[in-house]
Image (cartoon, rainbow, N blue to C red; front, side):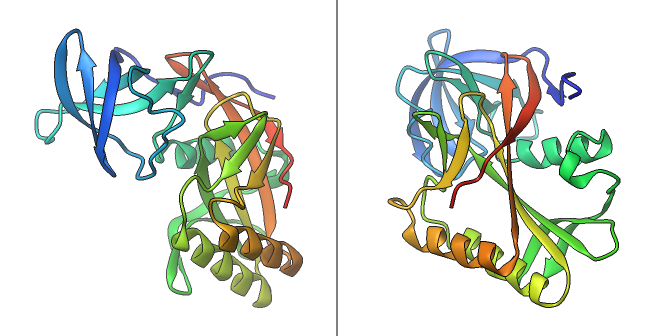
Length: 232
């Protein structure tokens, strides 16, 4: 596999995480100064965003309401990115560079394509329409990536839309990008959202494809590491 970086950042700013104050904002201490920063992840991400955790941020243009955008946190053993925009970038670039064996020869026809009552992330080329919905995963316990880390009606709706696409003769997949390197497989987090776990089983039985890939981040560069089994 091509191990060159998928995404690279320069001039990242480090700080100490203090607390999340709402779905998209937090306080971070940067060299003794407290900043109100943008957190591009609506879930609590409590396992990563712990008080005192080291975090990395990009500097936003002056037109933004906040000075910084938080993109990664350190668990004490490794860096994990948590920006929910990153997985779509990883998938788009992976398709362009033919990094996914499962989608060899495919190209992106459209992004944000209407399917039922939802917008699905990607429509790929192929003999049949191929819909791909991307999900970000940042929670890993004992080598297992768990999704979701908060109840997700939106995620259940996306599964139902993908099921409908299969019924109509299309191909459809849900793809998880695990934004850290310490996962060996991925499972639905049944205790957090049992309805999503049940919908995954229905979708699998109807022919929706499930794929998961993990990434590593060294504090500057993010690389794709390979595919993980999805266990339902």
